[in-house]
Length: 307
Length: 276
Image 1 (cartoon, one colour):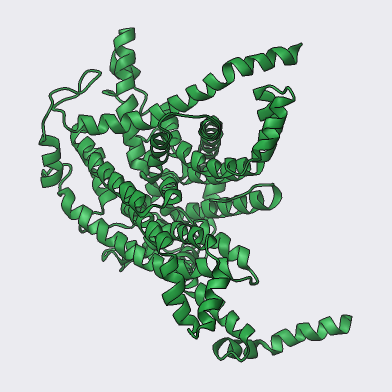
Image 2 (cartoon, rainbow over the protein chains, first blue to last red):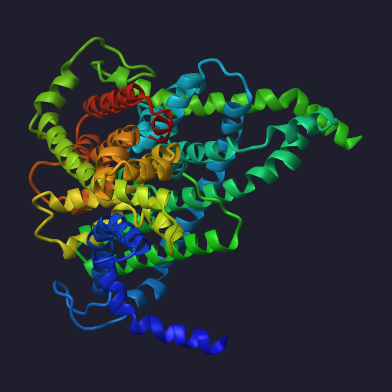
């Protein structure tokens, strides 16, 4: 048996040219099917290669480059700077805590919203759905503008509070503070969390909830012990994807500028003296972190990612 | 005793609380959109509410261009972005439909990984933009880099829309019927499978087009000179123009999204409308 496996392993390598030739000139129906599958996947893989993998590899190489305008030599100085300089460490901590906090809050808001949509009889449900999904197609700069409309110097909420409290609107405006930025993040992230959780909620077994209620469980207990365990994989999946969204936000912060996060610093490296090697090192770290984070989250938790 | 009290609390206040959260969320998301649109017709906004209705001066500035702040008119940016987005959508159809079919119809080694790569964005706009800067420096001025980048960034939406169409079809049965009637496999794919998935392809195209036309992060890094894409035009307005001019520019964008949403509803793909 063992010899069998050995010979088949060696055979794979020897048969490699054969595999290619049967791919191009298939003999059997099974080989023809394999050719079809490869043919169907090929256009996407070509796009992935030329617009994804090649540029990202080039970016990876630039991050080690000694020369400024061409990719030459090998140096770790840009990574050393990222890990040694307290300036970059502060940015990394800012990015992570802010992303984490906004993710937790948007999931906490999205769960009751989706719960209401799924369980209650609401008037004008289709309009509510349209409003909740509308911001998904808005770029971050527009989300930032929305926050200026609400909380800026001439903002709606600012002026209403100013009118009631008698204080000046300029003192009350929070759109360019960290709190304003927090709301701007929520403006793009809540609709995304709602979208992801709606898919999860549609698969809940409602019989179990009804049984729990008729056996005397209160609404809260039913949610805690019957609904929550069912939506847990979806919640973790939504958490992973919304956190990724939070880390990738750039346009919003470019307008409001109230917190120095990783993506904004990447732009500053480019804008102030075109330090592309440092920007590439930062982008590489970002990509590596998010890639590994997603991989571990999908592998070692019960996360379910269905969009 | 404790559990009874907590229970009565949630029975009495649970539902109103959940509804309150929903109402607050809907207000938070919709109020600024409405205010932006309304204020774009106002002459000034100094107090709690805009005043001086009804003027088209802001819209005129946006549509005609002022030479300061919003230095170009919205028309050229809109057309340019629309063209770039159409290019991105064409690429998306060519790459997205086949791979969605492969995953939905066949079992093969690495199928789940192919699926993950097809529906999870590889890198967000800003990271991909940095990667494009030096890899394709010559393409960025011509807009080709933007088209290629848009198509990769938005391809997950096409794959998902088409997949949802394929999932409701008996793919193997359709394919085998067509084959047994004498059609070759390429002919089956092109004349039987694709027309049946028309709804998903149209919905996916509309979604990808809108998202590509609105893409900011990637455009901001890659765009260097020439006609600015729509999102760069919006950015210039928000940062440089007067507040009400910016409101009018953002309103142009809202109208675009509203039109697209209506178009999707006409196509009748509810799932796609929600996804957008």
